[in-house]
Image 1 (cartoon, rainbow, N blue to C red):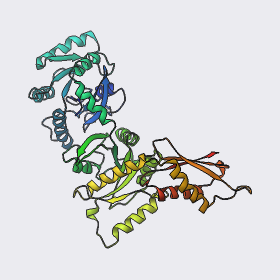
Image 2: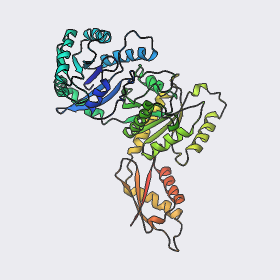
Image 3: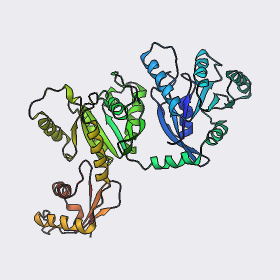
Image 4: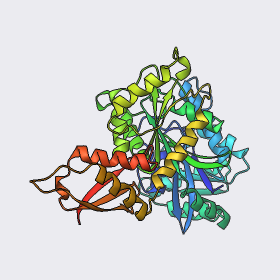
Length: 437
């Protein structure tokens, strides 16, 4: 397992700002509303040639009645358990509060190394005020400003000195693993699927739409299968996005698509596929990602002999023209076919990497061209002489011919269908290019 650092503390001390400073990007949502970070946020960073994971957690409020704050407390404790080292962040401008004391109490019981970081120390007066935090009783104390970055270098030096070479090696392996993003509208059961697969409460699952605001990465290693699962915030149509936060979440989910190799699009069986699902689907296809469609909550549907068949037919009609995608009927809560979903995603991942030998490609495709010629252009026949696969992440094929600009959509569709018929590209978008020979 790679080296992991958790950032903990009460709400509004600047944990997410510090997290973003370490990652040198805006990965965590930063807002001056307390309780913005609800789930554990994961990222990777490097310092002095050593790479490590960073977890940003929600604000710790021990005795709260609020449903989210209670859940956050659970999350923080899990993060402390998961981490190899802990950065305990406090705020010099407010001094030591009861919540800081409560957090310190939890951390003193932990056997992990704890580095106390006093944030917002950006002038000499504040440096003097910051000395009161020595009374919390931690050996390693650092005075930093997450916004300007001052003092963070010394803190990072101390963190990286804890990392052994063994920790770094396993992280490099992680970046080579297949990445699957679970995407879809709010409340389709994305987090429930993640928890069912991993078998532990990794994300907060609640029936309040919009609970998952950030994307969440989970390293999955069970039954000889290993990959990274990304659970994303539900993507809603722009008109429905009132809160600024949700706007960030949508961007974050779309970024998660960029990071993923395969997108698992979850739809609610009861509601069917909505216009928003279709735009998510076409966005994933446009980005050249593998796609698996998961129809969740199938256990709640009244079934007759051909219910699934009819449902799939209707679904594919809506997904046209890209219909060569696997559709699975699952139930995340009952754990029905959830492992089949993973196997299918792994197959789609392999299909996306498929490289066809040039000789085989030409043998099959030139035969297909002979069977059905392209329409004549200005009295001249269109001649396709040669086909080759391009060295791209998305399966792409170049057809060399005499009139590349005159090949129309119906014929392109015919060629794509022939490629799909002869070679397995199920769940993967294909790109065709026509070039002058």
